[in-house]
Image (cartoon, rainbow, N blue to C red; front, side, top):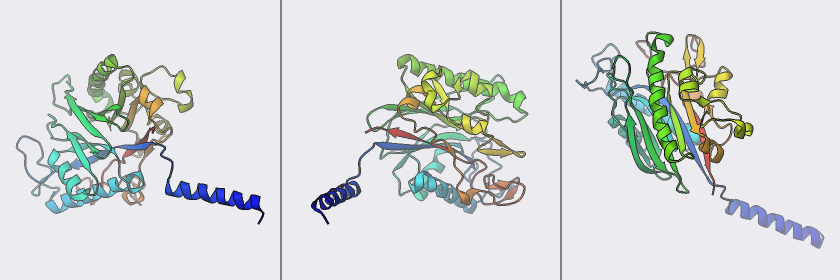
Length: 341
């Protein structure tokens, strides 16, 4: 081997070994997700809530054994996210109380330093929203919750806003949502989701008034799709093209819009996919942090129904009144934020 080739070989080996032993730090990825957990109830009757359906004595026979199976199943999905590393921020819906999330992270996700942001909601069924976050990466900086006032004064879920300090010291405001359902018909119930959208928009406008570059992450089960007026017009969360972001004139962008337009969804209903679960970000998050095209409907093979009428849909805990022992009737949705070094 000539001296020149020998020198090139030595340089190559040095670079290769240096790359393996001392990889370049390109910054921190924040993996975010939203998941409707489908009726995560305990087995104890709460006289303040309409939880009679989920008791050992009910027709569903919701026993401690079934609850533990449910928690184990949820943890399996959460563990599998982010290439087996779990999410850094997980917004969740349909949780009866914080004690259930405490049990989930302490008993079934104990390998992670997860903590919880939570607020009890006035919803009559007692199903709340919460945020599970990785305390090794994020520092909790406070929270508040807004009441959605419906025209009939029926109590519904709060909109929870939690503030976190990111690596690099930026503040990220995370909103957890579970907007009123379509019970009674989509058009008949539309005004209730409009009320939720107005409540959320008013709170976000307060943040933008303080800082037009506020870092905002909005997640939840909105019971509406990206093209519905509540999300697209009232909240003003629009579709976007990453390469043409500067041409768009909005302050909120719905990461789920492209999947929705492609007829994809997180919830399967009457033979159709519905994109009810959305992740929305402010323009500053889009420009500074969002890893373009990273939004996904998360479908781990083990939680997909394999055959029958509901083939390819999420494998739920119950099929009507029949216990199936599955996961949830919603797929999670996920995205990646990239925090520069």
